[in-house]
Image (cartoon, rainbow, N blue to C red; front, top):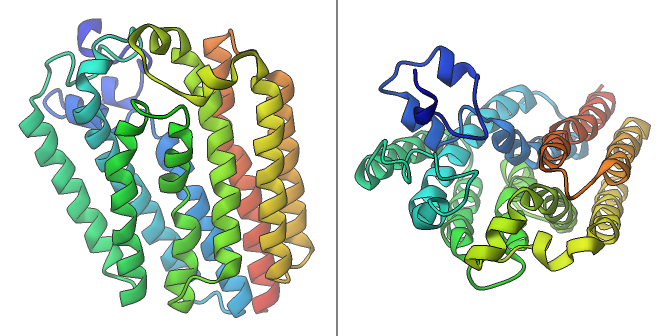
Length: 309
């Protein structure tokens, strides 16, 4: 396969080596060659599912919920990426890192991308319909934010806030599934996750800061610039504080606090390591947030098991 058919910032992965050639543009369109975004979308879902199960002192349904959230996060992130690339195809063609994506590279048409988007959304709907009516409506409500997010970089310096609103929605879903309501604990967890997303996506956006400046795309990376470390201290600190408030309101036990401490230590490590001029390092630190999220989830899961026993 020629390198021309690959995406510049994602080569040598399973899509390049194992997927049928006809399927490769679709899998790349929805970032199945780069699943980190799906994992980051999944983390607040798992946090809320475990926290809600612990509050209910009932983990009987938690394994199935975890699996359904996993499937839903991957297909809905795939659909979201397809929508993002459809709306951004002209901008992507002007950025070095993204011009080799399937749409700007002409590997698939907009109609084909839309068809694949709909197929993934239908799988997501099938997952959502396994839950109660309130959870179904809560999940559907997130589509409004998903729909407008790609346009925000054109009109505000804070598109990462809108990404946070979308990527943190799972913090509400665990409570919607478990209790058929969204209470204050869920909302505070949601706010903490939004602060986390703003932080890690600012790191990610530094990869494209120079190209974004040339084409007029706004981001918190450009907004904060040389003050990014201070901004991360604020947003990552806010994330830890708000998630801590959510845990306190849920009356969690020590495993959850240990998970939060490990999460906080990981975020602090990212700040100390960050060099905004090193795009490769920015990408590695961004990806490491999967591990930060899993550390917190492990603590919440252990807490739920302890409280249910």
